[in-house]
Image (cartoon, rainbow, N blue to C red; front, side, top):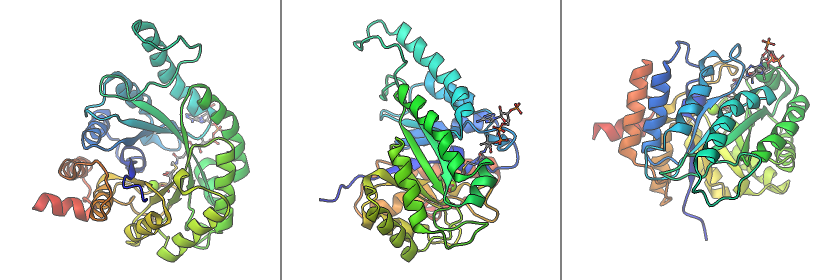
Length: 338
Ligand code: HMG
Ligand code: MG
């Protein structure tokens, strides 16, 4: 029987904001994260530990991590926050905040039934305890994009991940790995080899990644090519339950591609509220598929998202105004106009 629950990974606070030119105040970022957490979204990518020279907008992600660790999720439901990082330097900066908090938790929770642990363990999510934290790492399906985005080859990016994943595991942190430009590259064109994507996915899973997010960074993906890519992944032995799909709506194909993914058995999808985003290293690419649109689609198909559409649409309209940009979600705008 088809599982009727889909997991939406809200990437607005990270993927959606990282490309904004004007510096967004920390308070606005934190308010966005909190508003999103109140909608019933289970997973929110809240920031990234990348080089501030490369992506200045994400420079205060330590403070966002610190905030979410010190404030229980604003909803009664458990929330997972993800943080993106490219290398061990990013992990060091992440752990400076995370480990300090975890050690403090261990010391202060004398009533805890858990056995004391030499390594700080990941906090478990509930409305009364800190949220669950997960990490995400990223490489890409083409050499040119990998160089432009992370200043290294694909092979070098994998070498960076080996120690990174091992250290994440020692802290009981789940790791998801993005494969960018999987359905089209701004430098190498639309014909990205699906076998190369599948080989990379297999490699990342064998290295210990928990989930692979297949990203159509440019929005060049079409329904037939999405279907072909998912078939190629399955033929390479990748379980659809280990995949997420990350669509951009540049050419208006994101929702149809999502349906292709659903039909193939994928149950995890990335989206950004109000369709925020646009990759700094992918010229011309527009935003991520809007979370409101994805929620509307999934609910119309009888799938459960757990998201309150009114709350989500309000959050989308609020952040669009804060950023002075158009709300790119059709479903969000229509919901508010009712
Ligand atoms: P590099 O310049 O080659 O780094 O950048 P390096 O190792 O040579 O180090 C140079 C300096 O940067 C050193 O400092 C390092 O300490 C520092 P210095 O000695 O000169 O003072 N440094 C760092 N500082 C903070 N955090 C770090 C870090 N690493 C090194 N993590 C690097 C290589 C990978 C760091 C850089 O290219 C980078 O940060 N790239 C990330 C770019 C980015 O943010 N891209 C967007 C995210 S991916 C994406 O959006 C696609 C996705 O959403 C999917 C989709 O939408 O389709 C996932
Ligand atoms: Mg994206």
